[in-house]
Length: 381
Image 1 (cartoon, rainbow, N blue to C red):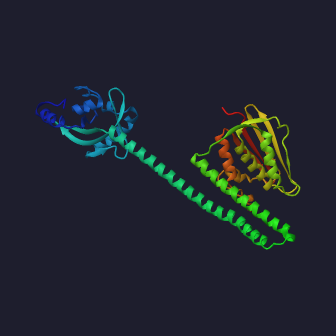
Image 2: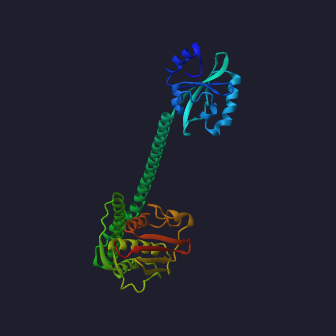
Image 3: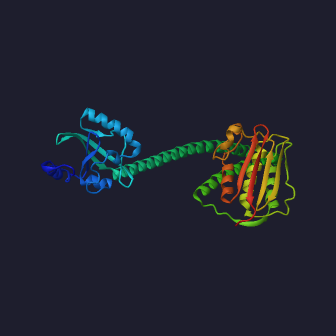
């Protein structure tokens, strides 16, 4: 302890130099009258470098006015207390760097003069540890919240899936059972036409169920990353012809599909089965959700390094409030709930296209129709 003299200095030096915390003594004018070596080292001073200085040299400038008021209040009360309780305190070193501290204030009388003894602790490591701990807690909390949200979403998807399976499988299976029962009753050659009609119904419903199962298998492969794409060079017209041929079997009375013009010379390097799946899904939906005597038009436009395909219908359209969910799995627009469907197709289509560098977008007006736009790369890099 510097600045004191005589026997008092010896006693203070023995006690204060043995203390690991920094000790700073100031008089009523906030002038530093004594320090120990721990305080000097903490604030970057040597020897008696702090003696005679204002206490403000150890306090960041932005806190000077605030500190002056607190000090006056303390001197008036004259009781021992923890400084800055409930708020963060900072000291400033000789080189200007700031660091967090804790300080306990003690009134004292040294050689007849009223003084304040501050016991100062550098809490940088503790603060860093606390901040790191808080960050870790926040990260773990965020991870837990995310995990719970995912679990909730998974449970909701499971519920939707079970509801979907029970609904989409029950109706066709019931139809198959009915048709099989009736077909068994038509045993004579004269009843062949009726029997053939019911057998056709059974075939169509089995095909529908098989498509649903294939959709579920596609989702599983997409999620597990087990999809193996097979690229080949093929004419676009080959796929379009197949898609339209199959869609024609679904047409309502008066419906027609307008074939795209000038596509015979277009060659693609793409996964042929995926392109067929994409176009089939969109064209079949266009037919399904459009009324009798309506038109589905396919327009193909070659662009640089990509192919632009538009499929436009005059159907029921997608309500504006449902449009942002249309590619979500199991989602079905409000005005399509009475029609058969799983809400899986567009989700699968979008996933495959994105995996292969393509895109799918749409515009729609409820009651006026929908246009889906598919863009796929014409060459694989």
